[in-house]
Image 1 (cartoon, rainbow, N blue to C red):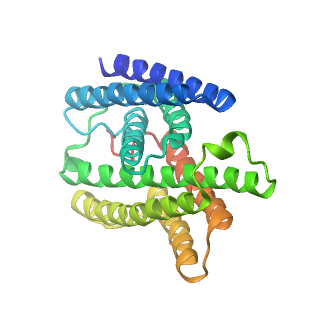
Image 2 (cartoon, rainbow, N blue to C red):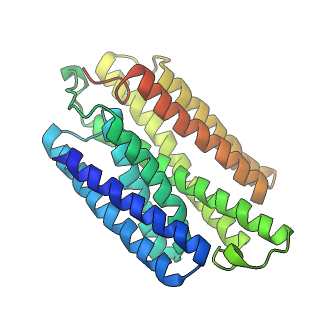
Amino acid sequence: MSSIILDIAVLLYLASTGVYTAFFFTRKDRLLTTAQYILIGGFIVNSAAVLARWIEAGRIPATTLHESLALFAFITVSLYIIALFRYKQRVLGAFVAPFALIISIIAVFMPRGIAPLSPALVSYWLPVHILIAIAGNAFFALAFFLSVMYVIQERHLKQRNFKGLFFVMPSLETLDELNYRCLQIGFPLLTLAIVSGAIWSQNAVGSYWLWKPRQIWSLITWFLYAALLHGRLTAGWRGRKAAIFSGIAFATLVGAFILINLLLGGAHGLAR
């Protein structure tokens, strides 16, 4: 049942992406509103898919790549909706919708079987670690989208192209501020995810750190975002430089997440 519901969510994310694309060509406000409502509809269906999978599996649905990506899409869109109501950044949805669509499509084509966990790994640290980690990734995703928007808007200003998307995009100051806020939340969550993962590993196998590929890449990602925040705080990194570095860090995060899961199987390799 959860797989069928996720298929419906993919269709809604596809429709939302299509309407957002039409908005960029026509800049008609009603299309932006329509795309936004369809995206929220996709989020609701995505939520139902995650909940149904949770009930079917009897645990948090994040121990296979299929489950992890569906949960990633759900949390990313949920953060966008919060940002929408708090900061009124409607155009941000035009970047969130394609991302949710892509990772949901990948999830759909991944094996959908429910993989049981080894009894030794059944722990309350499982939902704690995974929810913190994916929430941190979702904040980094929003930071990346805001970085892309910054680069686009900066280009309009440099070329004095004061038309088209220039009037629907937020100011550079707003984009930079929101990007920084996402990083300020995402980085502590990433840190907590690494710490909670180490504690979970100690409880499960008797060692805090095993130097597995996932742990190594998590540490690499941590250093990248630490360098980015350090650059902003001490070297005054702002704007384009911070935006590009944010993009590199996020590409490393997502690339490692998907490739390692494809090569090693399962989320964290805990399924048995």
